[in-house]
Amino acid sequence: MLAVMNSAVAGEFIPEFAPNIVRWRKNRQEAMEAVQLRAPVQQSEAERQKAKAERIKAIADLKAMFQGRKQ
Image 1 (cartoon, rainbow, N blue to C red):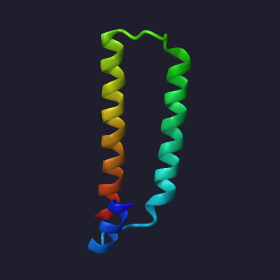
Image 2: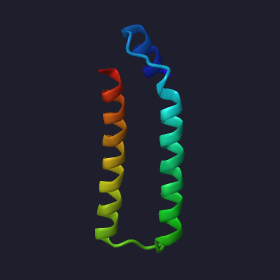
Image 3: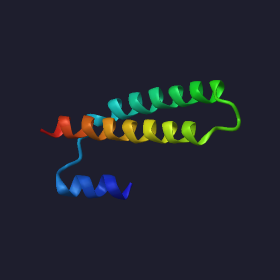
Image 4: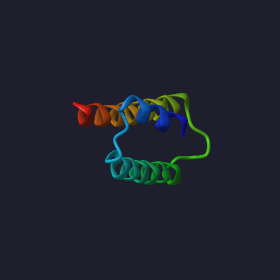
């Protein structure tokens, strides 16, 4: 909430992002659930690193979506 308020004060709050964020979160949650259904309980180090890389990419994609909209 504080981040939203700070964005609003700075003139950077863009309410049109809400539907995109909701869609992104829903898609991400569905993807994570699908992975959990397929993944064994124990993951190898390589699998953990792959999952970490996927999370990093998802965050970067979301940031890029925001930056593209501000321009």
